[in-house]
Length: 524
Image (cartoon, rainbow, N blue to C red; front, top):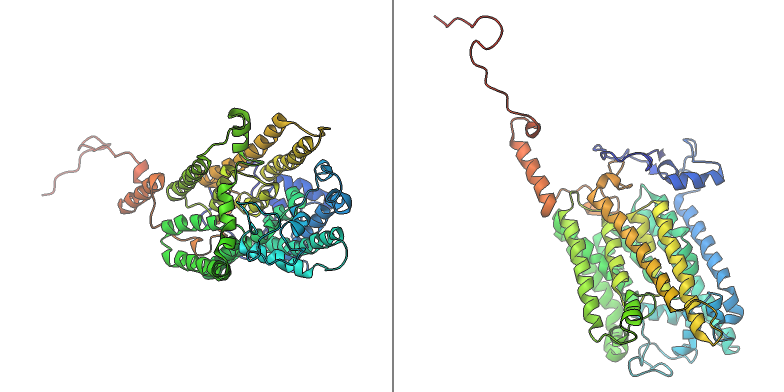
């Protein structure tokens, strides 16, 4: 059954208090102007006889096929490098914008020689990086792909095979991520279409192994949405064992559970995350502490790098001079950003949705980090689809990310040889600024939705937090700021003789004889 909701072109009004209709599925073409216009390519918005979700053609199956189609387009985009660019010429992989870490690290990290990650030093390592510089679960993913790679033929053919095996495994991760995203807000499965059709997904999926962590984090959010905090924590721990950023999801859960008084559920999620992370990491920590620590030590010693605000600062203002306190500045800015998000969660007039806060904290990490590789956008896509499911805002942000994608490769091509094919430093700084502005714009609309819930497309039908699990519809237990003022006002109103006492003026006293007619005679 479909539900027709209000159009965003209409002026915002109060959120419905009676909640959404049961057993309904929100269809984007019914409420999103951009989606409605796009549906005309396929015959217009679905009608009441479409029976979406009732037949074999369920949203999950459609989304899986859609993400596979987009993913395959991304593989074709890498074809010039697969046949030539990765192996011949210094800048071909940059001029054709088809670079990938995967084939280069097959030999560069010892997989071609049969070395064991974290236990065997990598070939031609540096003092700061003598072992594989990836988290343990990503290293295991790479090792499995190496086991599936042919051991015969020349190095070029083996690197091609290694990339194809990883591409196939990462495609499975993309399917898991889109299905899990559709389950995170069960009445709104089609919001996951933003992830499935994202241009940045096609361009960045096979640059590195980030889709593994994206899929695990999406499964964690789906489990939390289903009120299964232990399993949600387990998958947050596994995702953190693949990439560092998913640990930030525990922050929004902490402040939201604080506001709702759901300490037991947060404790279960935190315990599940810690336990799963230790199960994956502890064996490598005991086997070779230095090998396990490489990911964290390398992140600390790394200088400012491509895509970050800090690169603009160092190249443009400091003229290449390194900032010794860079890590401290990054930590301070990230902590302040997270504190601001936490205050927003506690003081907002209505408790924010989990997906909104999750997007904001990960975006803060992306914006303040010392490096922004193009594939980092994959971290934000499923969170953006849940936090702000509107195609207009999503496509504005994606346009900025696509322009940055081509900008970084063009800048590397410019510096790769003496021909200077590409853009120079000033234009590259402009590309970085586009990425920053696009991400900040999406943060702005999410914060606006939090402060004005009537602007939130997820809450227009009276929903509270479809991805909130135990938080969905839970009363507030602890609030501060404007939220405390509103609660006190409601408390006073509950004890007043008339619930509308705040808006009424006191009635004037009427003296005897002031009205019409004679005064009543005194009783004898």
